[in-house]
Length: 273
Image 1: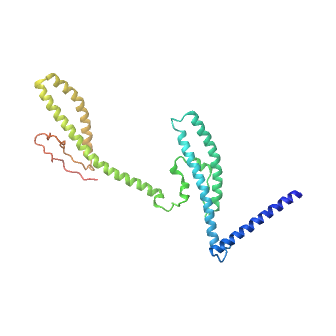
Image 2: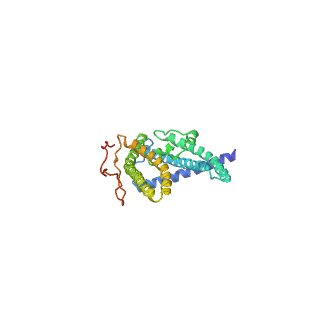
Image 3: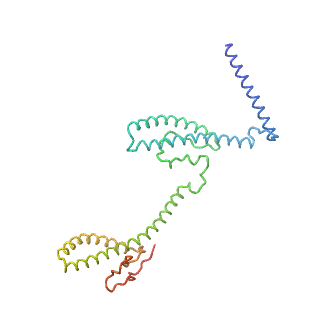
């Protein structure tokens, strides 16, 4: 009993000494900073900086939790890789078990600090953390050190509209490119047909056997070209088609258009997009 009283007296004396030292340091700071009146408990400045201190502790707990969750996501992604060996798989599994205990402790610290804020932040459970399968789903980022909740891009509808806008721009660029490729393919099929037929006609006079073999082989290719032309005709018949209808001339070659057909000849244009 006597020993317990002595230990209690020592703790009281130590606490009183710390209090005196703290008061002396506070007085020194008040003189250095020119503070005439101390903050009272419940005053405006007291509440403001008390909230700042609480927010600092909250952010620290949030940073620790984010760090652990991100590491868990990376380990989960590495665990599912096909090239991961058995030993490495075991090491990652053990690390995930240890990480789970650390995350649970971090959740407790986070919830404690979140309840002290004004207004209180929503609490988290282990189920919420386990359901995170991708870094973009980590909703805690909106409560992180830089508050981004008021930015336009944080709204899901704005992000979706932005993605669709850029997809639409790329689609217009793709249409322009396809208009060029459609005409090139038509021109290539036309030039190949004219050249092959002309070559077969010449061979019929000089080497009939080679002409028959060339004609036989070209029939298979002509069947494939017929499928391409059918699909191209379907594409050109659409109202939104904005390309040219006529057959072009390959750069560096003479015009291979049939007799009487001008390069500028084309069907009536359709309205564009």
